[in-house]
Length: 205
Image: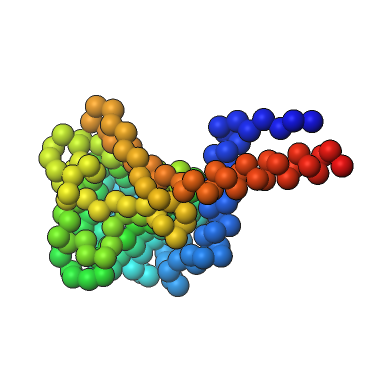
């Protein structure tokens, strides 16, 4: 029996591979405010001011903010595979210059973050930034308001999460909205092909 790999199957396989790599290679911060269900913030909130200095949104977590959100150094936000973050107002990244190491966002494969508009100032990010695993998504709006809100500009530091197998990012623009996606390394596609061949051989026996 011949197995045909659809785009949906390939995406699911990448997400699974990313989740396994995350467990093995990237355990993440030692402590974090964990969100594993739907949580809504109605007032202005600072991520770095949370009890553990940052937020982890698990695969079952869904964080919604209906007011401005700030993140300063050394605050962090980690979105696990399947986790969703929706900031419906402004996200200030970062708000104040607190020096190194800089605020950091990591989004695993299958994780998604959407923002009404993001304001980024490169000089305040230091070693931080936004890091995307393969097929992780960061979407932001109101990009015509200037370089600080447009992820294509030098004011941003949004990069592939290399340790998770990403080798680049892809930015698609539709009107006022920019969608940034982590691009997988070619070897991950080869691994999917090898897996398909192994399944075929097992089924023929």
